[in-house]
Image (tube, rainbow, N blue to C red; front, side):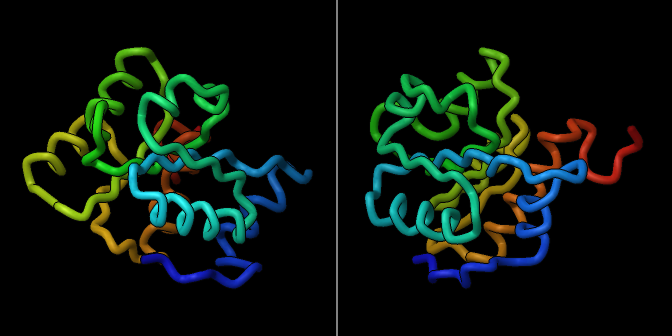
Length: 156
C-alpha cells in the first residue's frame, strides 16, 4: 500500500507543477483506474498531496464515459479488472488516437502481459504494493513524454 507523502513532495514534481514557461500552470490531471477501492483512494490521496489533480475510477468503462478522458495527462491503471482489463483499455486508447501515457500496476505480474503492455507504449509496469518513489519517477517520465512525444532530452 502507498504511504502518505509529505505535502511538498519531491523537487521534480514541485518544480514541474509550480512553473511552466515562467507562469503557474494548472495541475496535470491523473486518472487512476482500479477496481480495488483502497488502491484508488491511497493513490489519489498521494497524488493530490503532491499537487496533482487526481480522479479515481472503478473501471475502464467508467473512465471512458467520463469527461476526464479528454483532459487526462496520464492514466494509472490496474492490469486485471472486471470488464475491460488494463491492456484492453490501452488498446482502445491507442486505436482511438488518445496519446495518453499509461502506467500499469498489478498484484499479479506476468512477463507476457508486461511485454505486451510495454510493446504497446506503456511508460511503466509496476507491482503492487506500489513503491511510492518508483511511481513518482514513472509519473515524471510520463508527463515529460506527453509534453515532448520524442521523450525527455530529445531535441526540439
